[in-house]
Image 1 (cartoon, rainbow, N blue to C red):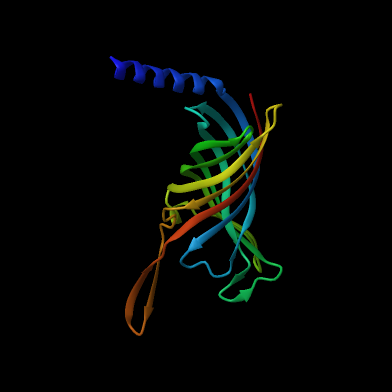
Image 2 (cartoon, rainbow, N blue to C red):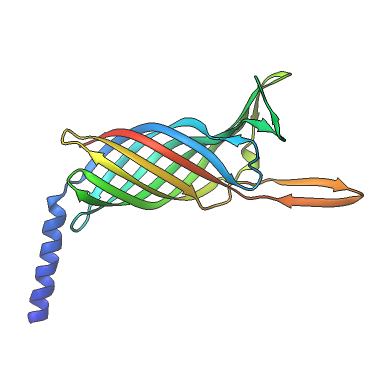
Length: 211
């Protein structure tokens, strides 16, 4: 009986604590500083792009909360050089657009200030090589060169004002190979096939509103 009363008290305390926080719905947008890491990244520089979408914050026990999000995120990289040669006035960008679903666990250090950590699943919706060379502008579909699924781990922090406006910083480290393309070449009559692995890395600065 004592154990039952103790478990009941603990459950009531956890429920009451969770209710002290608020269930929130919000939207966010901001800048991406996106890059591609791993093999075969010589000459690749970060690309500045954007992300936008919505979120919900679900209160858990104590200072913990769960924050699933649905984001459109423009990622990729750009070439600063190619095979060691500076591109000069020419440019080429790798444009990778994803629908991302981060599920972030949050812990409130103090009122309004939280740290967050969690997985992210991304679905590739668009991939292009776009730029300009000596022959003019080009815009080439590249979806067949990249995997349709991406998995990352996100870590960051967020601060929410009393009026509902919030600001956040996050780094998403890619865990999955995004490349779906192999290099093939012949050398001295021999055939070689080289498979390389690359990952998305994205630093995000966001602003949003939740209520």
